[in-house]
Length: 283
Image 1 (cartoon, rainbow, N blue to C red):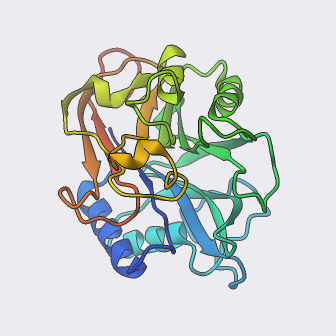
Image 2: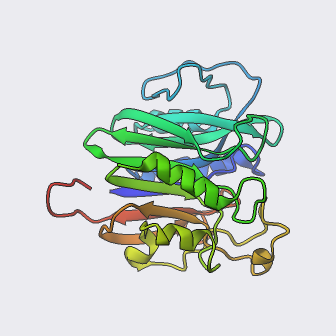
């Protein structure tokens, strides 16, 4: 099984359409089983698009509008012969002009979705509002895959630690869970978000991987980190794929970093390949 996560920064990127084509072409070549995306935007006031085959609504009242990043990617992949089932969840207003949300793509049919707030606030107009979106898919009924965009450790209004507590409470009782996304917690900072996650028993697939690269997913100034001293080195690993249990990982590679595919966002992506496990649990 192959998993990919990427904070797309969609619609805000310079040469966005060119970068979107690069993303689609990469998916056509790599064919990940699950794709988790963050900052999946759509213009707020364009007309609705027809919900085509493969779309699985996570809320009946959600409007997918013309220009929606996930919609366009799924449509182009389908036109090229690669079919994905997908869902999209708007979370807040982004950059004062988008419905900013989360999306997950799956090569096998989506059986169910779920979502929850992890932020204290639930104001759609507040840029700090946070949700997570999860899916369960055919053939992997006992596994949940979540796309996640966390806040910051030092945020005085809504700190990372409290968001993590809310997330863990929501996940309680689930046996096999994958958390994929932008966690805004650098792996090299001790005593903060990364250590909290590992202390909670979660497995960093980067560390589990038999083959890996340097792992950095940010190497430039980005929104939310411009004033932070952690960005002085301009190299951080803040995008992850976590698993609730230890699993065999063949490889973990950074994608879209200018070395392994062209840069398409202010974040790089992460793709892991999971080796087949023995026993009843299908990976």
